[in-house]
Length: 277
Length: 277
Image 1 (cartoon, rainbow over the protein chains, first blue to last red):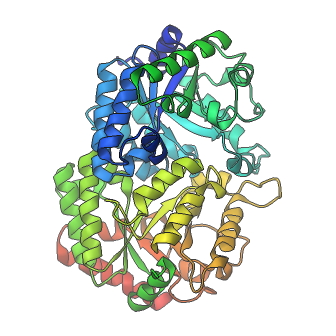
Image 2: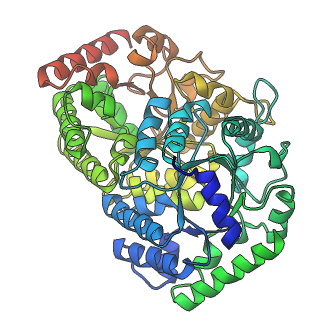
Image 3: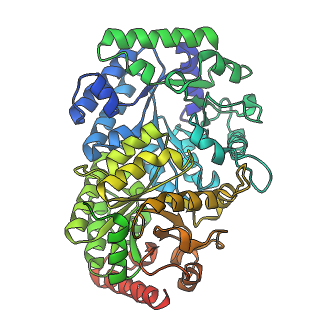
């Protein structure tokens, strides 16, 4: 039987700590690096970050938007990055925030979560605007192939708050509905479940016992977006070790393009997170 | 100055009627067509539908998920489809439902809405889970390049209802918040605005005067998903001509693979919609 994503992730996080390195090769980053804003620049940047953080972080999180900028050529770079990360024994979470009706989510599941697909990753982020239940094809494919899904619950940006804190007919806020639904889905698993949530570090604690999710958290919002390591540590203090994945992107990328700078920045974040969590 | 998407769309819909042909080359469709579920099957199906509906419909809506299944090779097919559709004078709405924080949406804007981008289309669908305000880079790029954006408000699937009808702190439902926000954004435009919404035909009429959006509607849910032409006509009866774009996918695709079958189905839908709306 395939080992589940949840179990693999927890093992790796216990070895290397909670750091997830966000690979966001935006125009801004490539310009800072003195590289052209082109497919070549994209490839150089992505692979340089991968090389620097191998052995330091357990997980990389490429932001798909920045690859999609270059269409199929950008996706070829993403395919290479995924392949090289797997060869280097890193887990890959594609930050894609995909989500649609169930028959279309079947297509997204085939894209990101099936053995042999060119973009197959360890886990993909998805958006619940069309309902958590509509995401079922993604959950099913993840379970079948030992992969995972992170459902966006509460994001780190202020513009998302109004919708994510809206109250359903049952008087539950949207973000808590997502957390509760994911906790229910994870009941079928032994050990850490493979359906996680994205929970921004800049938010107040939701009205939900975070230790009861039975799945992993992916946490954006550190550094450039305003939250500190201690905010994160406080938010997740009751969670088991190896269940929280903390994304750092700009604060590491801006230390490039030299390997030395990238490596030092990644090690510093790893150590700070290990000390706090 | 570039003519806006809203104005171009309305002109084309007044000429050819409200039919938008959804290009959804799923495993299911390719199997029905007796074609392999491969990049070759994908390309054959997409281009066959395009050829059949040229001159019959004003707009095609490729569902990006089904191209993404094949990674960069699938995106090459999508690039070719977009190019050939433009050569044939059809408008292309990429159904991608992208959406993230604003700095990431900058990447999605570069992918779908910039001159010269391999995937540049006339309009792209986006999801507001991280806030309508976070979508600003997409609205700005659309305005600058004469392109458009459709923000998902209410979808045709039942699983989306709980979230889309949740009430914000101001007691407004999420779907009406999206409609109102888009109406406000379209105030800056002369003529039909270039920011539309996706509004499922299977839903009850929202608590919003649909004629006041100042932008176009993209309407899924006809045929396979349960709504009839008369439901749509009733929902939008107060809207100006050429502001409603009605998507039909399976009911046309299932009439393939022969050109004759596809063409007859597309014409039948065009005529039914023209008669009712």
